[in-house]
Length: 117
Image (cartoon, rainbow, N blue to C red; front, top):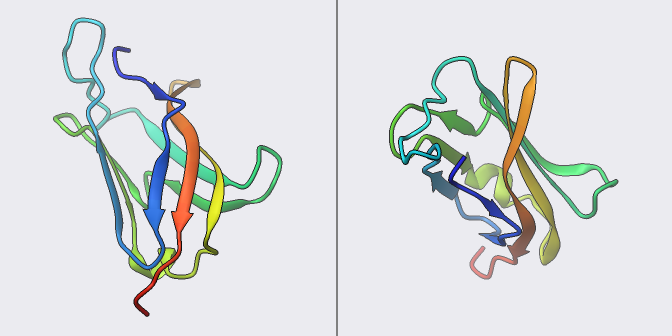
């Protein structure tokens, strides 16, 4: 897999619709088709053993496709407005197919507090 953002930071603003589009390619530069046979899940936690404050999958916030972007993550304002901020923790995105799990995206996750309420 050519794409890797392991160790990258994601910043979310409390009370805002969060959107992230990702284009994953194979080693030959072709877009990977995730639209069939794949599931996805992503969690955000304060640390690796705490409860998830965000827990989404391909039925609730992650869309998998066959073209650019082939992974889209959306967290609604109705969810982000209720998150505690400021917050610094960790996230990880997993893709699953035929029992094989890959983790193309992980790192630090920051929630900045909302000013306008």
